[in-house]
Length: 323
Ligand SMILES: Nc1nc2c(c(=O)[nH]1)N[C@H]1C(S)=C(S)[C@@H](COP(=O)(O)O)O[C@H]1N2
Ligand SMILES: [Mo]
Image (cartoon, rainbow, N blue to C red; front, side, top):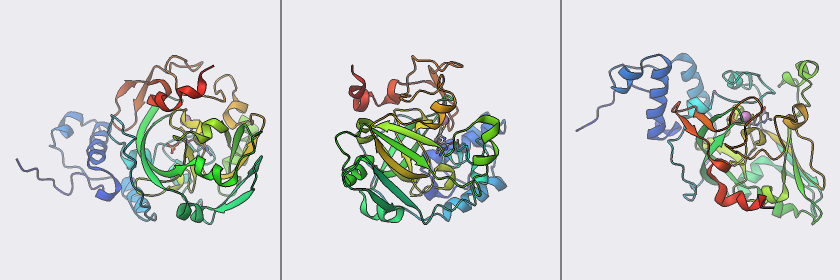
């Protein structure tokens, strides 16, 4: 049987997503409109909304980034459509709400961008993000991503192991932690001043890993997603992805990495230590004080599924936490 797809069906340009992403995206869109059954049967001619069109244009304007997919990282669920992942973001510098981060972050200029790497290292260095993209071993990895708020997604990141950068600066034996810091610029990210009094948010956003976690092969310094550089809402031009930890550990728009001997203070851990631990590995058996972590909702398919220990990456990282 020949499938005839009318162009009005779902006009997500093919290079913005995989075929399954187009499929899931369309279903999600239809479901959101309350046409689940009709849509699934393909009876409803769909047109994309103005917002989608705008986002498609923005994503298409981003420089392409080619990297070979590392097939070692396979995920059992379909990819989340880029138009879904691209407007469901946590990036508190720009907004407290997920659905408008992409609009508030639009005027943020991620280039030129320099990253300082220092502290307890043999060779203190400052890198230009463009140089890193040229020099580092870029690859594409499809990872599960699990937010502490119990939503999750599956997206293809492009980046290089954080270990490659650390090897370049040679941490001292006494270094035990890597402290990561986001840019500070209230002119483009007004929440960095507006909310300080109200919520006591300790800007700039900071995060941290142990040196062993940072050197784990899963830990990716990420510069791209879906075959192009990161759009602002995902943390342009460089962020961390540590897929066995809750999403808040995956700090965006990094300007500084510092090797330290003491565990660094971090944003959420400082703000609400009882709810956001420093370690924060994905763990279905350890509830958040205000909700269970046993299940999660995939933002693409909308399916509810059981949360996996270490988000399904135990074979890579469980050894790090053996007493
Ligand atoms: N600088 C910075 N990094 C951040 C955040 C933030 O507010 N500011 N939010 C974190 C949280 S809670 C999550 S779930 C992820 C979301 O990443 P995404 O929007 O690319 O899906 O980014 C993390 N990194
Ligand atoms: Mo999160």
